[in-house]
Length: 486
Length: 86
Image (cartoon, rainbow over all chains, first blue to last red; front, side, top):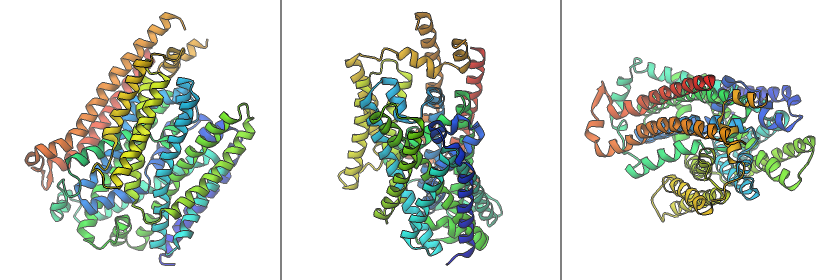
């Protein structure tokens, strides 16, 4: 055991997670409780949970690490991860909640009454979730292995098993409460490290920058084309992430969904504003000492706050991984146990659906562990960027057009989704094979998907018969619905 | 649904969309113009603004966030007010 304090703090996180799940176990008796916590999570609770869900290892460790490595160009990630929330708030938060389903596939299938779209959305959800789970599990294995001396296989197995246990035991409610605790830990750890680090520069930002002037200018890593494409992909990708979108279903109303997004913007905004300070302070205080970008934050914490602070950061990183993967497990479980199972076995009882959901969560947990083992050594931040690209291309255009344009047809939506999904996958593969130089394909595939939806819908012209009823349901205020219902 | 209800819904959706697209475009412009300015107006963006903090640095670590928060609060308060009045 290399870090007894950190190991003890990770143990505390594990114990709290299990206790919360155990206390929440009575709330998993219905599908509404298992998937959306009975739609009874308040705006501020949901904002904390969403922030915990969203601030993954890539945000907690990765952004500060990228700023340490590349200076200003790493800040693009912080701005992009943050900016997506505004797009989500302005265009999708309220309508998605008002539709009141469980999964993204529910939403598109409900809008267009299409089995094909349900299947496409289910595949898209699983693709995005898998791309997102892999780096989290790889991060868990490498971080706990390097810092606590745990075997990679053991660390991945511990993280995967713990997440599976608390999702199965407590469903969305336990996941929510755990994510709230994890969010507070993450934010506080980042704040304390930033404060201690700034203290080394007399709490003067300008003094800090004077020591790392060459890292405070753009262009060390990304050229114009790739910086533009990256920020475009990250901003639009957030609004297409299934594990984030489904959390809006847990709000009691559309208004509450909006306030959730507002609080989330403040929580994650203040968090991302701290990451450049931490990254540049690490560059100034540690130089080239960190062996990898993922270890920059723990090493800075040790440098400015000793073993205890390092322990808090390691526990925070573990919490970041747990909260994000738990959200992804719920999203993937919904795609399989809800979208696929209810399509194959229509009319299955609620009790049976919950049982299938729990079994599916176990299956997804096992897949998460296995993929973590298979993809050992892959670049974590790069894989997360790819998940955003697929999410932006697959879901954002179809959700935007489905919610706001009544002329969207089933064929248009399906064609757009396929163009986005396949196009982004092809662009990613060609980029990996060095056949083209665009690192984030969204700048091409998102407009392509939008144009496809518009063009095919115009040619097709067969809008669903209840389009206006759908528009009424997702856009009109709750008061109007109450009046409608007498 | 009857046609008057459809018409009211269509008008409401159109009004909401205009508001969201206007605010969304403002934010995307503020965000996406940064790499453009860094490329085409590099000299200006690297000028000192506060001590060693350049224009581009202040823009990326502070200005984008403030703009987003202002838009957020404006949008939510206005939408709440409109829904209340509806």
